[in-house]
Length: 220
Ligand SMILES: Nc1ncnc2c1ncn2[C@@H]1O[C@H](COP(=O)(O)OP(=O)(O)OP(=O)(O)O)[C@@H](O)[C@H]1O
Ligand SMILES: [Mg+2]
Image 1 (cartoon, rainbow, N blue to C red):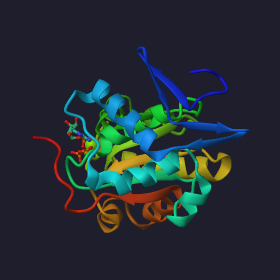
Image 2: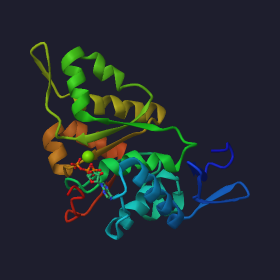
Image 3: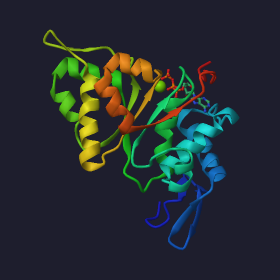
Image 4: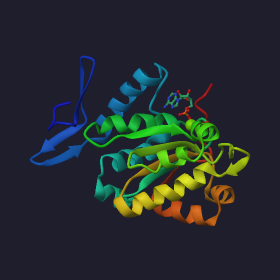
């Protein structure tokens, strides 16, 4: 990636042009982005990775969000200053997409994808320091939010991800630090899991982008 041409991405010896630079303005082309996502997806997840027609609408939202196209995002009710909560049924491709998406924008500050289960396991070993570790300014995508076990350290139970969400909300308010997440749960189930306080903050922290309930399970 050259410094002033982040829209031209090299994978091995192949060059992908995701758009054109029009003076100072970057104009991305959605179809070109999909060509790149498919190629990068095959490199990361295997040759069976495809761009499904049924996912185009979700992909359009996610791509416009990640390239910060304010006009398109506004039309779709997406606030580019918030994070993304990507919800959908088991196996529809949430984790894969969140891992892929950041490669479209190599010039932007990356987010780290972390499974919520691992965070809780970390908490069980080392305790509250784990919660502090995620209260840092790093951008994260918390993978599989809502189905992680409850944390337990020295006989004390803790809603680890609930606490982390409260910290991430403060970071968002004070410094505009972004948090993303994937989940199988709907809003009501998330509230049942984390309570009203956390749920209310999550509404401000995230744009909700949801796969259709009928989306196919891509695990075969
Ligand atoms: N677009 C795709 N084309 C082909 N295979 C895919 C695609 N997206 C995901 N897969 C494969 O399908 C499986 C499930 O994908 P992934 O883990 O991203 O789903 P998920 O929505 O995060 O599932 P879960 O809800 O269980 O966390 C993986 O093996 C992944 O490699
Ligand atoms: Mg997943």
